[in-house]
Image (cartoon, rainbow, N blue to C red; front, side, top):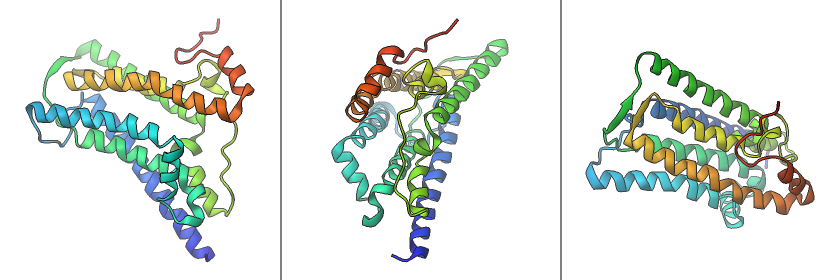
Length: 245
């Protein structure tokens, strides 16, 4: 393959992944802040709930499957054969972003508002919502933005080098809990100033995934890193951070 074609492929995958990631974050912030009242879905009644529940389920189910051996093989087929291994993490991030966009864009709002903060309460929830996103961004940074955004894949192709995953993260927030990314993700689901039935259902469903999903990830880490991860797991709490004096 020519150098020009390799660079073109790398840049195309990088643009797609990062554009989708930016749209996904924007869609999630707007939708959660407004209690999931911004979806473009037009279904009503039972049909709306069936469609919304399917949207809720597709993210954790597909996300988890893509981390399995069969899922990784499928990811490899989504890129040119010569770059299948390198572009796998980029494809994973791209698909995850598209799943998030689909959830919030296709959501059919029920319009059932349970509580909407006002006055001092509004500013309190705004602060909590902003803080939860700051925490999530910090967790993503500590986990390695290259892996979380998929840039380690397309940049490896651009430089004609193999992907460098590095060790499992232990710095920053990972010193106090093993899954700060999932914790931050869960916090964003519960701190909206607008509380709707839609938002409550999503918060319960995806929080359950944030609690159970990392168990699959940790089992994979244990196979890869062995005693090193076992030692880390024994000394660091799972989801709720250890508060140091």
